[in-house]
Length: 122
Image 1 (tube, rainbow, N blue to C red):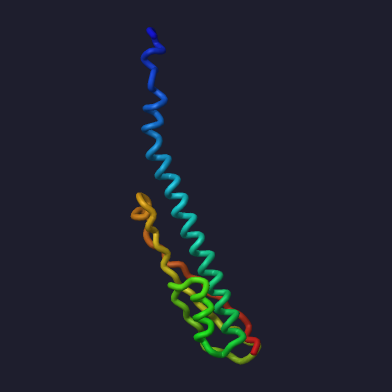
Image 2: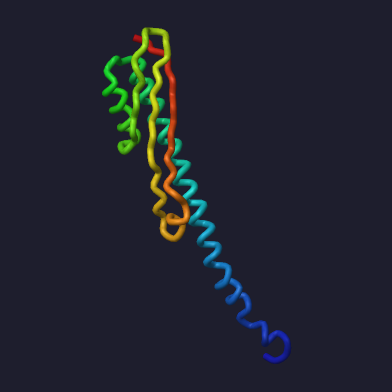
């Protein structure tokens, strides 16, 4: 091959080699954000489970066990139990670890928190 086409040979390979690291970094960043969102959904679910348990059982340890069944490493705080018909408040806090290779160190570990109030039934 001679002429202008001969000088363009391998151009696509070089462009791909230049773009590939940026593309991989962007994909890993999206995955890391998805993992944090997953953890946030788990925190909300754990808070709802704990609030439900606290609304039907006067023992606060049952609410903590209910939250830990969903999210074992969560910090659970159950408010004082009011009279029947009033709201009890449960707060669940969890530190989401961002440890995905390459992008994990770029994101700080966020602390996720969910507060749920539910009416006491019994």
